[in-house]
Length: 261
Image 1 (tube, rainbow, N blue to C red):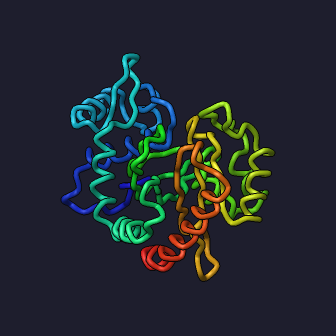
Image 2 (image 1 turned 30 degrees about the horizontal axis):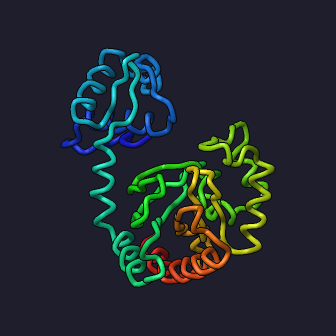
Image 3 (image 1 turned 90 degrees about the horizontal axis):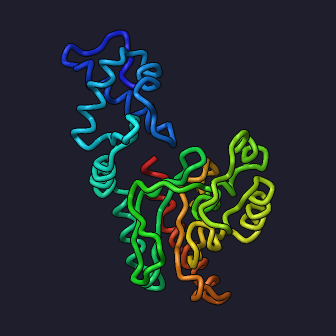
């Protein structure tokens, strides 16, 4: 686990390493975690864990719920945004999106996969309200999102079954994909056409298309780009134009992302 080593530098503050471990534990959990369970997972006394939680909550890094459980605090989003906004990846994305006038009205995102979640590492919200405001660090299920499905479309069916083994597919709307079998059908179509769809699966009235950014040297997929629009504006010709623009965007980002790995 982070911070565990036989020979730590003299200047290391053990309580800071314990706080980092605590944040890691909460980051791995979708649900808030009770104090007792946190203490057990960290192998720390309950009183020490309470001290860490109280300090981190005061700093906005944790949120304490009424039942005494804890999860990550909103200040972490601010820190992530500040970090990612200064990375070359974000700058490359902003420059590439701004150069493509076809995307002026639409929201665009750059995403990577973390397990069964998609994480947005760069985004630009469009000028038309679509019901979702994207932000850097935002997570959504890969099975509901165009960017997520574009990312896992590069995996073999057996890998996808392993990824979701023992897990329920989350449903954000009535249209969200409800089974691994149905998801695989969508992914087969995504592989055949080179893009994935989110047809009101993340938010009612919203339609998205996503394209994977593949490694030019044949390595694992680098990321995915996606565009969101109002379902009422998502005709066949609009979709075709958007997909072509996304593929152009993916090609622009391919080498910068490869070099940043």
